[in-house]
View 1 (cartoon, chains in turn green, blue, yellow, brown):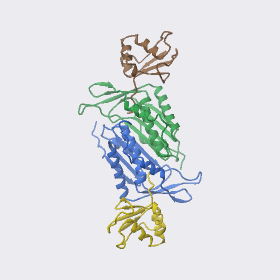
View 2 (view 1 turned 180 degrees about the vertical axis):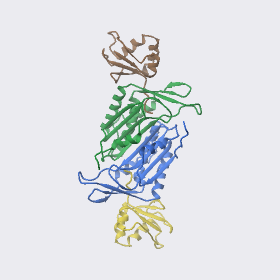
View 3 (view 1 turned 90 degrees about the horizontal axis):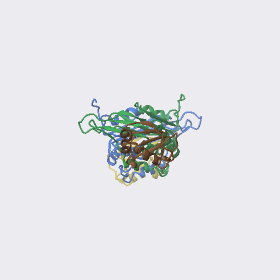
View 4 (view 1 turned 180 degrees about the horizontal axis):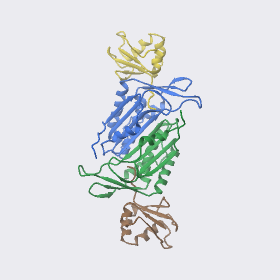
Length: 168
Length: 168
Length: 84
Length: 84
């Protein structure tokens, strides 16, 4: 087998452009045949326009510099808590339309439970810690999206040590 | 936006050929802008050869007919338990090499918790219910892979009703 | 009755499938396993560890006390190991 | 001290960033917020709901009693809403 370039343990990207989910996930395990599973989550823009009332859109603002720092810290925390080989977060900013990809989280591990749990952890923590703000345009008016208590609750469940990955 | 073909709610495929993760996951949300997130798990063949002792491989045997029936039943159960828009399971059989993809599970929902939890449920249940058997060749000898108690435990945790997806 | 054997049970029996006509007293799965075991050492070796013999009738998992009918498709196999 | 404002806090203040030189008695974050509020109605409107004002100093989240230094980069923003 020809030597493939192995992915860096941790990949963080904040960008305006779309990303290629298949290529990004394939890169997570490239050259590392110790990886048994890759879990991922792709967040998409939902249509918020009232039915048949034209085009909705969303614009994501962020804090350049702090965003990358926070995403790196979250990913490093995931790598401390679970036996991950590689870990990926790509988050877009700018104007997005319904169906567009917003975020990709990917985690690769020898064990599927580690990959699945850490993927859920990353997206939950990211939603309450990464400095992004959404303004929605429903085709009629713009409004800043409000933070949801359910997101805080989702993040809070990871505050305690995660369950043993062996028994899950 | 041109009308895109929407994916069927449930896609089950058992095949010898590889699959395109990016294309399969994109198809899950095509034409449905009510979907907010897609969770997925890709299972890969790990290298079991002792270090530097040549090429290992794995051959997956299955029970044609029953496999599709069981995968469909598992996916239908996931769609009953969580508010999923679409759901995908692709499982390969035949001879596979380290790094090869074995299985893809994908779930799409308006809500990320539903997508993430049902994806974990599907891979856990699939591992204990879908009639596949692995024989590993470490480059020296072949052996049938034994079922693991940890897989039974992982599946058993879903026996009770899942936690409310709202609060997670 | 159509029999299907998979994985190491298939390998030990030395056959992937066959059609059998067990006697009338074979009414349920455990009767069938007992009867098969008496057909030869290959069957006895394949089926001796009952704990790890899984059974599907007409492609659905069943217990050892599941009743059998003449036209059934009966599959015997070890615990499954798919996924990844 | 470099100030950065984001999302509706930026929109209400009407400015994305500025350099300020608060008086010496502004020693911690809450002092800075009090001082900013007195600079005009736009600041008062943007910062009145203290519960939803989040603060980062040098790109790390801090509490309102976090001490400030002259060269700090201080960002004010509402609760974050990224992800999907």
